Amino acid sequence: MPKKSIIKGTIILSLTGIIAKFLGFFFRIPLIYLIGEEGIGIYQITYPLYTFLLAISSGVPIALSKMISERLAVNKNKEANIIFRSALLLMFLIGSLSSFILIFFAKDFIRIFNWNNKVYYSILAIALAPLFTTVLSAFRGYYQGIQNMFPAGLSQIIEQIVRVLVGVGLAYILLPYGIEFAASGASFGATMGSFIGLIFLIIYFNKSKIIYNKNECSKDFFHITAEIIKIGIPISIAQTIGSIMALIDSALVVGLLKASGFDDVTATSLYGQLTGKAFVLINVPLTISVAIAQSTVPAISESYAIKSRIKLNHNINMAYKMAMILALPSCAGLYTLARPILSLIFQGLDSGWQVLQILSISAFFIILSQTSTSILNGLGKTYIPLFVMLIGSLLKIIFSYMLIPTNLNILGAAYSTLIAYFAISVIDIILVIKYTNVIVNIREVVIYPLLSTLVMIFAVIFSYLELNKYIGVNLTTVITIFIGGVIYFLMLHITDTFNFKDIVKLIKG
Image (cartoon, rainbow, N blue to C red; front, side, top):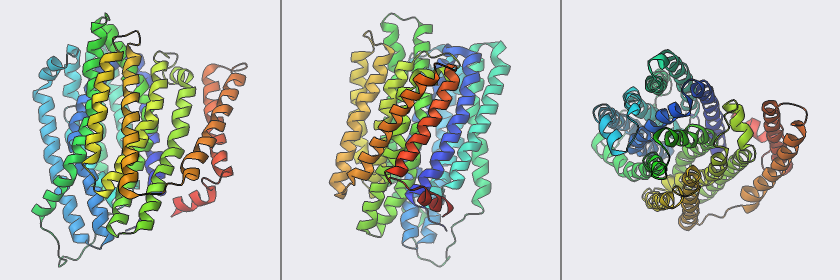
């Protein structure tokens, strides 16, 4: 079974993830025209609840990839197979319970969180998605554990294509019946996308089963299930706390905006700017974060299992290096071109560009914190990120109450996110250094990526200002992004941060 490096796994998952996110833009553009910012607000309000329920089970696939990678490193293939079957059963049970809760308690959630009543149909439309998504994530955890990222990445693209086609199609068909039904049609796209993505991985699974000797000694199903739960619970709680930060936004932001004097429609529209527009765009660099984390956990677990100090230090440096190389330019680019990018993606609807600028800085710290968390999880320090996320969530709540009711209004929600994740990232990095005594190559990990990004930003600003004198804003934005990308990769090559020949060799295996 082929092994992949952090670099190759990250490249595969980053590319497929970014393709999936761009497909998501094709979903948002017609959707915002069809249902407007209020409709986007209705559509988005359901997602923090959905992701919260998914976060409850999120520790299982991470534990699964960690445990499978460890077992394969020491040739315990039979045990690795039992780990997958146990995790699959756990995810099915958790997913079924989550879907049940969404179906039968939808109206209670609306009352508790003071949501718009029109959200009810969107909750029902997305109710079966947790069942399909949890089982799907078990298969993805399996592929990450064997360090074969291709099927997991391809399933993301398939899932997003189905989501776009079904979501936009149903939103268009149901729009004459009311904005709440159109939003629910868009939500149902997520349900169908996860279902088809799951079917694809089930079919692909038959080609990549772990081969083992039936007479091989291994722990029984019960003990392995207990180990998965032991590792997975703190990770799930930490992820749940992270999703609580999104729930805080859905519960507090709209309520605090109303308390500040905004009516229900305006408050929902402002929330749509935050989550339906700005968060959608910063999810592109956050896709990189997910890719790094998914590649890092099994790689760190493997090197830790075989007690290779050199390999562990290399993998930690590589994880941070990939985080900096990919996060810095994408977040800096979003900050610099926030307004024209919003105008390009949402065709002239650039409201909320200041929110995007703030969140683009937040995204950098989110990526750093998630990379550090994946290292700690790979080391088995799964309880530590839980306490760090608790600190971040408390900061998020405190600053939301302090900033949103002021003249900042929706910008206050963005600033509270920035403050929370800045604190989380700093604490996480300190803890990684404490528990690993890693020697970080400052020149390769920090200085070269930062220098390359600064040169890129200078080129982007100059190009945009000059091109905008002769051609339209949208074309200027597209050309400027392309120029920025070319300049950045040239700088990586000039500084020898990454050699193109080495990247080609890695992709070819």
